[in-house]
Image 1: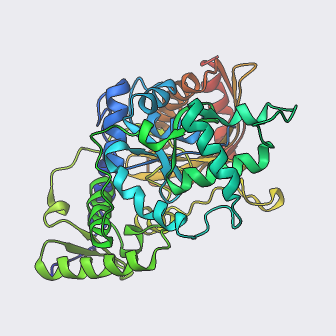
Image 2: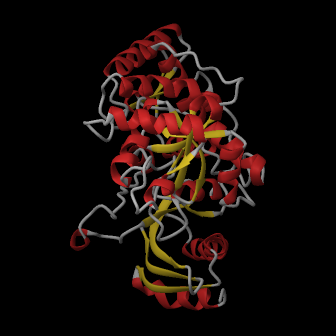
Image 3: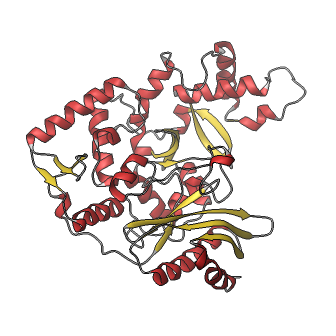
Length: 406
């Protein structure tokens, strides 16, 4: 059982590079460009979280944008339409590679067997009526129910019907066949799912093995807790622990130990593999980006204490409603709270916080201006303004630099 103990700063820097390279964040186009790149990206990172917050471009578009040059939000709809991806629950609502479909089955089975996801009480009669209607009349949009105010025969009150649709979706009888923004279209799973997709229920041990492969591929290394991140399946956690201990004993997994004693597993030789060089790009990431979503890991590896504050009462917020993590090289060097005003095509930076770091200040500012220019284009904005920045001594210079962007 090999244990690599990290003691030198350069060793931790290498671990950070492994994490970022595994996420496709060090390379300019790790997965290629456009639609093809987006498909390769989600197959590699395993999921893209869906979120409704829209102060800037939504998280599921933002995650692709951070990795795939020439990505356009409409490409997510294209991937859903051509069945490269499907929508379901990972640790949260997410788009997932269609090839991983069978690993959604254990949770669907649990929900169908009585485990509660959203709703405790289910209207089985209404679910049956809606399922019959979809089977006979074809796909059903949530707005088809929502917009019916006359309560005609064969239609249903929107709120109970929406719950029924969502329950059948969580149980696996329905899938989302297309989206228009956040309006879903539901259809029978057998009509949505490509015929070649494996629908065999995986055993708990198979599921654990799948998660190990996925997490090591997209993160480079993982803690035992991280391998089943936010999954409440006790049997799965037990199977994962057993499998990890078995592979450590066989020598098909190694361990890395941080100076605080925290351990992560990785494939033998992964720590010594050639890695991309650090670049001078600054990346503006989503709060729901795969690279930052495991906050304990983020703090342990990058010494970056991050919390999304949209769920925090306003009076208790330190950095702002929807602060975006800022990555430069192998360091998270700050966060930015901003809002895209779509009617006026203007990006308002409410607050820019640059934390203590050992990077050249001028290089960071230069990289930030380049990143903001691209970020504005992604947001559909033609101009940008800065309200506050910290430390404050940088504010005037940053404002001047930003003015040149429009």
